[in-house]
Length: 146
Image 1 (tube, one colour):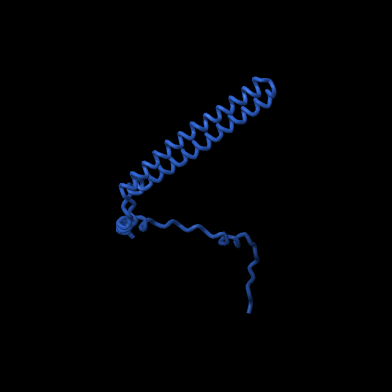
Image 2: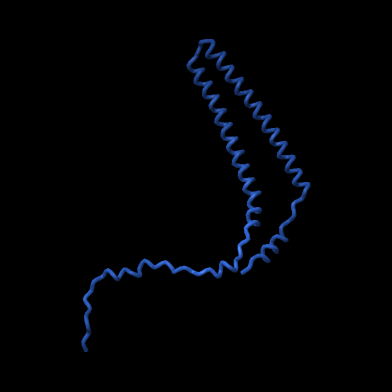
């Protein structure tokens, strides 16, 4: 059962990638990265503005210092949590892309001779659960007389 011919036939049927589509994907990816970084900067500026307003209006003015400290900490840690989630998802996406890119290369480097696999000896089958259950029964042997 040599599968090399099947692999070659399937490889011929795969559509070839268009270079223009790959370039468009790369440009779109770069544009998305720039837009995402810009949004992150604007969001960071907004969080800093909110914390500044909380500090000046609530804490430094002395009207509600404890509530201001709690609210400022909430805003800061909410922003850090959001940044963590976004960065973690980006890392997972990059790992998936690396696995997808390396998977075909690793499969082509491994040459397994399927004919040899069929010639390997089959080990002794696993015994059934019910094979030895009657060995523990002690019964008197009775002989029939006719």
